[in-house]
Structures are given as structure tokens and as C-alpha cells.
Amino acid sequence: MSGFRLLPRFVLTLAILAVGGSVVGRAQQAGGEGVPAVGALRALYAGGPATWPRPRLGEGARFTEFGPLPRLPEASLREQALAEIGRRMFDDPALSRSGQIACASCHSPELGLADGLRTAFGHDRQRGRRNAQSLYAAAWMTPLFWDGRAATLEEQALHPLLDGKEMAGSARLIEPRINRDKDYRAAFRELNGHRRVTLQDAAAAIAAFERALRPPRSRWSRVMERGVSVLTDQELAGLHLFRTRAGCAACHNGPLLSDGQFHNLGISFYGRSREDLGRYEVTRDPADVGRFRTPSLLGVSRSAPYMHNGLFPTLENVVELYDGGGGRDRARRMGEAPAPIPDPLVSKLGLTRDEQAALAAFLRTL
View 1 (cartoon, rainbow, N blue to C red):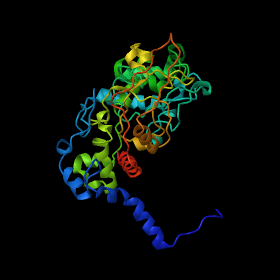
View 2 (cartoon, rainbow, N blue to C red):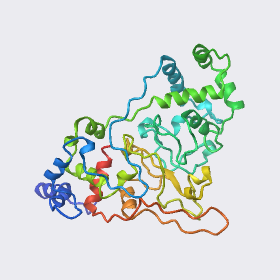
View 3 (cartoon, one colour):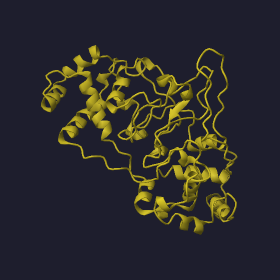
View 4 (cartoon, one colour):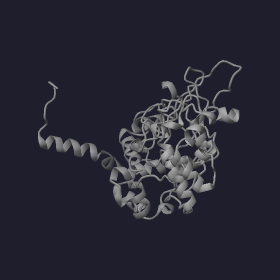
């Protein structure tokens, strides 16, 4: 701290204004591909999303207009009761081989229903290959997992219970433990008449709990209700870039800010020790090598680190990746999986530092 010197108050104030107003000042240089001047920008976004500037889309983009989350059918009393059982099971380490790992170990509410780690730790401190995804939008995000291997929430719930690197359980191990718990037995007997609780019963309960989860209220949800007046000038500039020149909306669109598709960003580490071939491991379709499902961006500021392998600790890092046109997967030796096909929706952007900062500021409103 010996080299630290307090700045005079007026100098510090000018510095803050310079940083905070840099995007606004740059935006006032109308014309070209730059962000329009502040007044013009607010006029462009004065109405609802359907009236906003047209998004920049590319080959193969599947765009759905931004909007509030659709209402799901109201859960029946039975579904609500099942979700309550699932809530307890989600937090119960007895469902793991070691008796020390629960679903909540990798999906903590304090960490955006993720775990804050690059890749998750599981049974016997084994480390998985992929980043634990947030569950906020699980009710809408099918298929599930980064590679889309689960078609339903019930199927998804079984995977970590049985995966040898995660909870490492089995029906022979888990079912006796559940049935020794008189509260579980009584709850399921009242719910469906089952005298013995099965692994499928547990998966159904956990799925019902996950289906009841909702993204937290955010600045973005208020934008969907009240318009862009809740955004700062910098955040609005970021929204405009997200929708137009940066091309983010080509994949991150609709109420979930996800197209539900699979894309190759050039970070599969193809041909290297950390290789992950993504969707290809499920479909064996050469077109799917290195493709991963577009995650929802709702609550994204709470769920760092980012990407399927947790490669980037900050949103600024993610913006830099896209600004550079994605990663660069190198070729590998012949005889194994074919080389990844670059995604036509990912290309160099040439954003300024101010524009990158505006984009990151907007992402934090989601």
C-alpha cells in the first residue's frame, strides 16, 4: 500500500464521470455503426420489444422476440406436495454413495443455483468435466445438460444420482436409505399409495421441485414490465449492442434469452487433453462436434464462472471471447471424431473497450 495516494475529491469525481460517461460520450457521435446518441437511443427503445431495432441475425439463427417468461400451468395440489418432498431430497446427502453430497452441493441458491466452481466436485473429490449449470430456468430448458442428453427433468434428476463422478449412487444403495426414512415413506404413501419408495419416485420429486424454481426478479424483468427507463444510459447502450452489432440476440433471444440450440464457440479443446466434444457425444453426428446448448442468461451475473467448462471467471472475459470471434479449435489426428465446424453466427466484432463495458453492464441487469 506504500505507493497508494488519495486523489483530491474533485479529481476523483472527474475520473468517475469520465469512466461512467465514456459510452454516453462516444454514443453522441451519431452515424456509422456506433451506438446512437442517448436521446435517439431512448426513442428507439421507447416501445415494447416488438418495436425495437431489428436484431442482427445470421445464417441459421432462430430468433424469438424478447419478452417476459411465459406463465406455466398452475401446479396441482399433488404436484405441489411432490415438489415439497423434492425440496427436501434436493438438500439430502443421503441420496449419494458417500452420504456427503446433495444436489444442493452443486446448485446453491447463494451462487445462482450453481456452485461457483469451474467444474463441479463430486464423489471422492473427483472433478467433472463441465460447469454446473444454474437451474433457474430448468422448467423451460429442455433438453437438459450442456449436451442435451436428458429429454425431461425426471431423466435429468437421475443422472447426477447415478453418475460415478457425481453422487455415485444406485437403486440398490439409495432406495433402502429412502425407505428407512419414515417421513419419506409416509409422504409418498399419502401421495401415490406406494408402500415402497423407488428411485423413480425420488427423481419425480426432485424434478417437481426443479420445475417450481423461477429466476429471481431483476432489472431485466422490470424492463419487460415497465420499459427501458429502468436502465442507465450505459446499460441501454449495452442492450442495443446485444441486439444489433454484437449479434448476441442471434442465439440469446426469447423470454429465456436462449434459442435452445447447440453452437460451437471454438472452446472444445479439440485434440487436447481437456477435449470435450459436447453434443457429438450424444448424437454421434459430425455436425455436432464441439457444440453446446445455449444457456439461458437469466440471472447470469450470479452464476460465474462461465461456459461449459467454466473457462471464464467474469462477464468481461466472455464478451472478449465473442469480440474476438470465439476460440480456435485446432485439428487432431485422423481416425477419431471429425474436426469441429465453425459456427456461422460467431465472428469477430471489433467492439471498443467502452462498447464491451456497456455490453457487460447490460448482462448484469438480466
